[in-house]
Length: 261
Image 1 (cartoon, rainbow, N blue to C red):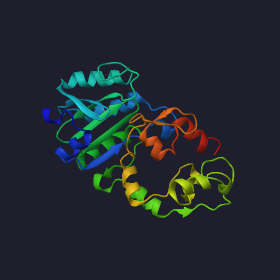
Image 2 (tube, helix red, strand yellow):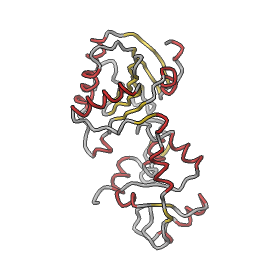
Image 3 (tube, rainbow, N blue to C red):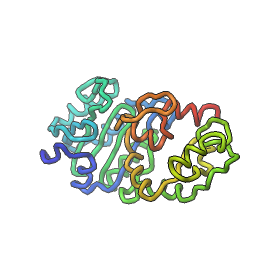
Image 4 (cartoon, rainbow, N blue to C red):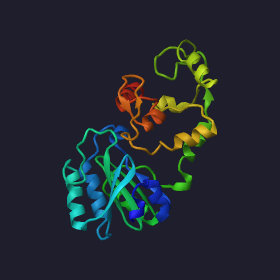
């Protein structure tokens, strides 16, 4: 286990042959605060017997691997739901310290409001059943080799945005009077869109290499890799928001595409 120190969670997946992934939906998707206590209790209920290693991560990189009594883990996870205990990080550091829990069947990274769950198919599906019973919303479990293919299919079906259509940025101006020149200068292409814009989502025209690059951030947290700025309010944003929230923080993105729809 100690050889994993300095590695990433992706390397945990490879070492233990975890081929399925599940992620719970956070408050930015639900449009309401996540019941953190119910979320964490679902994991405690799922993990009744498995002995777990406690993995401390910083910016997604493993810093420590420790043994901890299962009762102590459960007690501190319960405290995490109240922003307390040894698994709670109250620093202002944008590269937040997080904790994961590892056994031979799965690895779960748990933070306030969200759980990232990697594991063998049987265990990922069992955890999905627990979440369903607890009325906790989650993204459909995916096979690792299939991740990103749905988005790639969407991108292949996009059409060019017409010059006289409303601009994709939400300004209300015609495309030719707004972002057209900038898009041509930056990408050499018209922006491509489809009906997803009407539902408040967004998509861009991408080359196959760009698709592969953006797939790396699709499942990242909204507080990971905070090296970018919201194009609306200049607030620090994550790599995920840069690639999948139109370069905006959650507040500006929701205001731009969801409020009033």
